[in-house]
Image 1 (cartoon, rainbow, N blue to C red):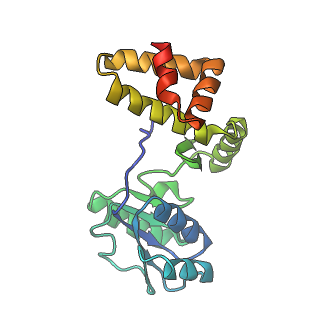
Image 2: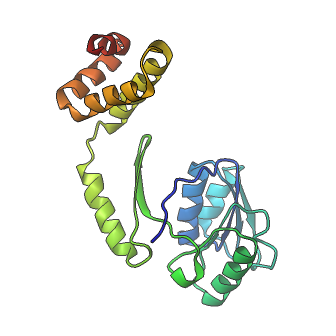
Amino acid sequence: MLYPIMYKIKGKRVVVIGGGQVAFRKVKDLANCGATVVVIAPDIHPELEEYAAANPAITIIKREYQAGDCAGAALVFSATNNPRVNRTVYEEALALNIPINAVDDPDNSSFYVPSFFTRGPLLVAVSTGGASPAMAAKVRRLIEQSIPQDIEITLDTLNEARTILKEHYHHLTSHQRSELLKAIVTDERLLEQAVEAFKNNMLQEFLKSLL
């Protein structure tokens, strides 16, 4: 049984071993989350090299992996098609207590990356624990298709509502605020009204009407 977490990696050093298209996808995801990425590989995919040149948070080291490359990393990704390299990286990361993921190589991984999608602040991740990445991707696509297109503004509305309740309704307990937000989320009519009020800068008045 795996324990799911959402890891804050903004500003943290992440090492990616490998420079192909798979590594490129990893680097983009990591950079989008604010990580400081170090890519180590003798050959770098042109798209990755171009992307790194435009992003100061990405450093490319053109050489083979060497012992000590994992030191100081918050996470390590081994995106090579060489099981020997993956094993060596895995053993070093394990000795340093650094989480390591070897792409498509579960035996040399201490964690797995789920299939995920984002839509604004929404992040949905699906994992099969390494058993079948293809099935995880299929389930993720099914979930993605069921998410309303306007989910971003709905989440913005609910985030603003939570802030308003915290800042302007001190007499309400945390439980009472939570129950009010749950009531809005579970009632489609109330949710639509809340979004409309948010669009018109009248969300505080709307919340007051519910109290």
